[in-house]
Image 1: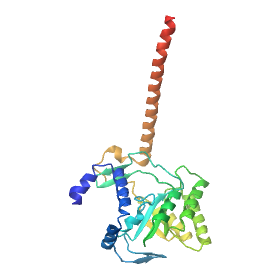
Image 2: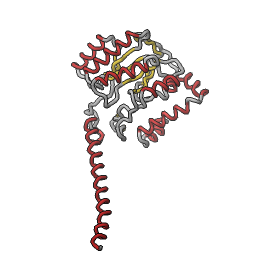
Image 3: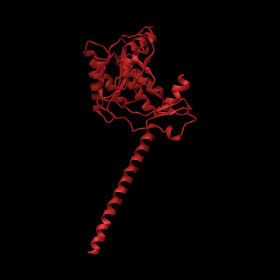
Length: 295
């Protein structure tokens, strides 16, 4: 039924709109308590395992990206997930990249996502976690800096989100490659210092990009060993497009090419608006000049 009816219908709708629809449906489902009880009973999978200090219900989890603002993780847990990860969470609200920013590559059975770190910020995420976390599961959060932060502000951003959420989640995920190597090492050093100063030890995992090279992998392993990082998450999305054979050129742009094209389009629109404004101004001035001549 899904492949024959539901999937074709959903594919007629913009993918980001479908995502918002699912979140809204889950918010309605939140209040259907008898239905939730039935769903939990049907999908519950108890095959527990331990990793370090963490004990999971089972090995199937939901990664960050679906529930960016920690709005529906408790409802999603009903469907059998042994752990869930919300985010990516930044210190402040972020709109993300301009739309459209998610592209289905149907023939290649792939997806390009350029959403950016769109989220409501750490204060909203914390409020939602405290309000909605009801049942027993491991909850993680993917954290990052504000996109425009640089230098020492990068370290402060990570510290802010980490310390604000520390008592409310079970583990943190940091994305290797989202900031420069020197800042990443400093972030790990500061977060380790904080962990040593408090009673509760909250695990840290490093999420590796799919395209990481051996040199970078050696470096991240040495940092993980130095700062007693609990483990790695493999992997983030790939930037390699070599296996895509049926997709339009515009959709195959790299992130840098995408940003450059958007900036070019924005510049052209600004020039066009300026030209139209100039023309209207000239049109208004011409009758005034004619009146002066008549006088």
